[in-house]
Length: 356
Ligand code: NAP
Image (cartoon, rainbow, N blue to C red; front, side, top):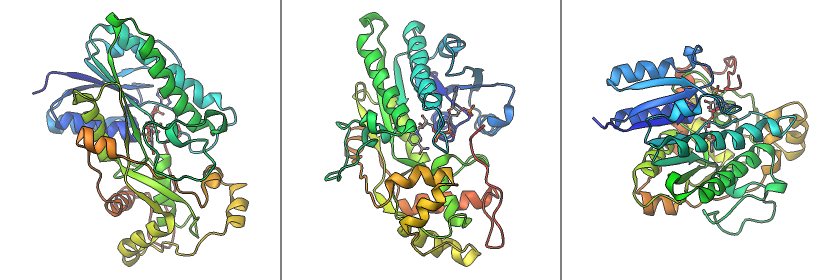
């Protein structure tokens, strides 16, 4: 049994749930933060999992919008994996609704970690948008950890992730040596993979929409996907690897066009009654749909654009690996079916998402 206690913030989230599962399977004791501990339905799947594995898992309340609860949350923990951040399905009316909790929340967590006297390392869940957001010119090479978003051109979510990561590095650099913990940033591409409970996070919607035909034609969009199980492994490697501190690590598979995704999904799920669209959605129609559909509106700026990411550093330095994109897509599709979130042709199940 590994005696180390790891704090995972935002334990009800898609990525955090898989991180917690991976940590429990590797013998770590885990404490998770949730906004409301009385809403046990948001973490019951993890409680059952911990019981089945004989692992130690507990939950405490803390909200990114306040500094209350964070000192108690980190108390006694040696490591903090900070995943909590607003991940909205649509562009918010006021960008500060996303930016403030992301940035202030990160600083609440880091201040508590610095004051704890026990936290040795913090792993921050950043986003590929913190390297790529706000770039409109042609992309001539894959993005690396040396790249940063152009904040003033970024949409609110990308801005929130880039600003939160920048704030974390700045806070860390200014810490007195005595209070200094180690800091690592994990930078995932678009995360898909099996769902632990029937709640669809924004990034999984691209697969859901193809299977439930709520998108009857395929936009010219390209994604750099990464499987949530591989993202969980990356967080543990970033937490354990002695050479990781001070580094950013992009974790992502290669890019795939949505039309190619549709082919992969149709080959597997077509025979099971899912009519995956094959026709391309013309830009003018997408623009029209975007007036009513906030998720499509979010995607409009990415039409026809490729944004390749290089995960070479994580592969070489952390020994991280990514599974093939087709495997991620099929696992996501099967999980959506198993949870009753998509149904064959006649009608789609009502879509549920993480917006609460
Ligand atoms: P998710 O399922 O929506 O999880 C987000 C978590 O953050 C939830 O537990 C949520 O709590 C929590 N949270 C949001 N606002 C909060 C607040 N004000 N106070 C406390 N907790 C708050 O999203 P996810 O996909 O797992 O994302 C997790 C992290 O990965 C985020 O930092 C996200 O930016 C990053 N990321 C995601 C992707 C992706 O494709 N999904 C890609 C790159 C990076 P509630 O349950 O109470 O809402």
